[in-house]
Length: 383
Image 1 (cartoon, rainbow, N blue to C red):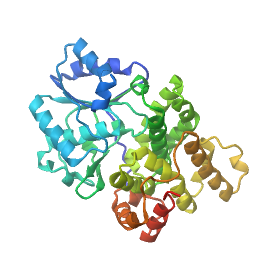
Image 2 (spheres, helix red, strand yellow; image 1 turned 120 degrees about the horizontal axis):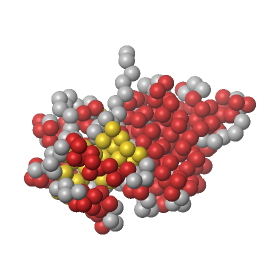
Image 3 (tube, rainbow, N blue to C red; image 1 turned 30 degrees about the vertical axis):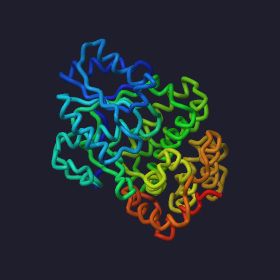
Image 4 (tube, helix red, strand yellow; image 1 turned 60 degrees about the vertical axis):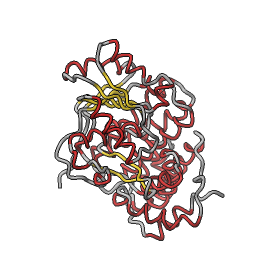
């Protein structure tokens, strides 16, 4: 079976990358832009870093700023309606994972209207047409939604998140400019950075991993280990390196999948509105412990990338534990809790069922039973 890699047609990286956006639009011949973002970024003046460029270059646009955290089916449908009314022919998505995921769903439904119910996009949907051309401008260093073929939507009726995987949804352009991320609060920098680390480690150990994606994931782990602590302290170079690290992780995991740290994290976000990065960060060392005996020598390279010294002199048991300890320590250093707020025993059964049904679960290196899901969830219950 062939290994597949799907990436943006073009991506721009580094400080000042957003200056390329007007040229992208003019060169591609787009007539009007649909700007998808959230109201917080508008109020904070972050979205205007891009919309000011559009205005300066006489590029017409319509602003949709009603993106919600953990976007819902209804939120996407509102965006589809707004896009149709706008008369736009391209999208600029400004924001973190929620804004990017909303834009992906909008773009797919506009060109594949038979999926207007949104829920039918779950899993690998048989869409026929590529999404509306999209320029993705991330404002967080974590989800890598600008380079992935995945997006996540919340079904509030059933209190669950569902994952959509579709090569037609990848943004045509990614513009990864660290200046768009400078205003992130410390807690958001920490949680999104740990989300990126979870992408890298789960992508590196997933069943579908192969040489090219391993290369991406190991470099991402190394960059995150070296830079996340300083990025939380708002050091500019560390912020720039984190912007790159999360993108590199996305280049990998988008093409090989993830594991049950993400499966369980999705259920926590759906049930308790836990920030996705926090849920991933809490689960990552717990799931690494669960998976360790099914990962061959990979934890040695994770430990090395995390900055652990002397790994070549360690036994397999020692380097596996060293990798887990290094990940747990990084989370602790950047203020990640070790439990999920609101988690209670009476919810465990439903959480386990939802986690087992999540699209990320099959990629896990160790196949979990329902009892395993229950046990893993109980490990992060508040003390």
